[in-house]
Length: 621
Image 1 (spheres, helix red, strand yellow):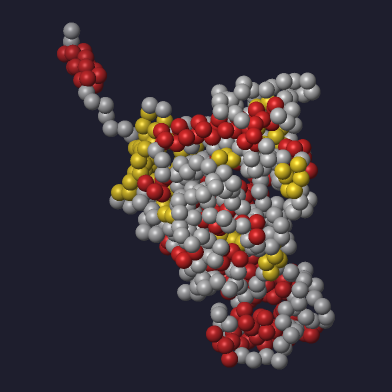
Image 2: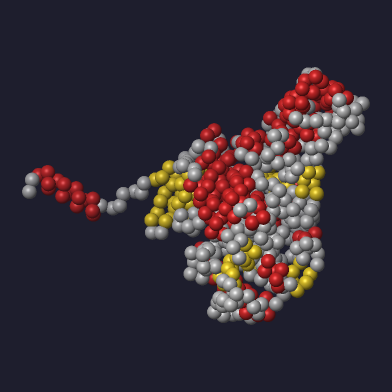
């Protein structure tokens, strides 16, 4: 044997017997834990901005509550198709054949099969070359060292270590932010802490009921898809499930099992079973439980849903409706994960309370100026399965549409961390509105936008410019103000959104059934008094300004007001710019009256008030 051969054998022997080498560390700009509705959108948005992104997702699907939990009926924002939420809906329209093809159940204007939603999200993610999605991947530890996050991920028996300067918690229950040391709330708040009159006297740890959804499929007349009788089944448990409020009026009660079933009817003769009243909601507070404790408790939830399915098939006679065999890759054909309506709630740089939602322009802090997502769904809580929950008549809480402040995604005292999804900094009551799918999708997009800017500008989330984040969202067809009468298709959408976010021209909020509203009223005439009042916080010189214009605002009046701020524009220039913008006025020449749209466009063009920096609380710097 030659000396060279002996050397090779010795090296091989030493390699075989030596301890395993340290695992290779994967470097990425942004690590997102959780490929749910928010996490997926965060990954897509960040990758589109040119940074490297890894999403660690515990299942084989993207979409979380939208898909893997089976909640495939969109609640709210039908007239606010913001950003990636609008893009997702457009893909559904293309797949099924237009808006009418997905308006199949009375609970929503957009219903779809969960597996189709998963396919759409995977297609959107696959188009981003800077985005990697690691499926079947959980996490075991997170810690911050030398300005970066060190995260250990688990893929079956394999561990992987990832280092990233920015970490996004997009988990269903806010597990990562808790492990990272962020402060949070859990359960109902005390009214004395939040200032919300409708909150209970004392805080508690009660969260909303959760649901294991079932997707039933119509197998045709004469088919019998009845499942075996589940353990513990008692038909009386579900006797009141057919007491349905009429979806046309929402104020009558009648025994109508057909209407109950049509609630979540999906395309292709499927039915989403996600029914709160004597249905498959169940109360389980799993938030602070261990993974093993959660798994054991969730078996109860799965069994409870199977009991309800058995009731539908036997007591109500829907034997031809069976658990869909072409949806979830699970042994019992139920979703991979439950629908958690509530999780930990971050203690962020700001907290959105019911007071800001109900009266955004009257609040102590002008948080509406810092909006990064919008919603129109009412305050909706599920507590029917927990008799110990304090009695709060959520149906009577009337609010307009609203926006979510940027500071609610940023934790206090923890660098490099952004929180999204249902775990943002809102009160328990407000969570009943912000937990809905379109809002969560937008929160994910905003989180991805913020994360990418942190990487590109070498800043912490708290150091980001609110106005820059908002500007980028607007350029991505996002909404920062919930105006329903100016859409992204309008050439003046961005100008209206920007001036609306300054508060110079305010929207009018209207609580409206299950789709609350805020109107900009672009054709409504503006008074000189209204304009001066709106401008004063930005231009102190106007504090002593008095104008005879009062109840009217002509071009001449507008020019005079702008001159008082230091901007000297001629009436001829105003007329020329309005004509170029395609905005028609009431009247002619310098005496023409200005409407709200014209004022917004002109203010954005001449004064640029949106560009004036604001704090995370919405105050002018």
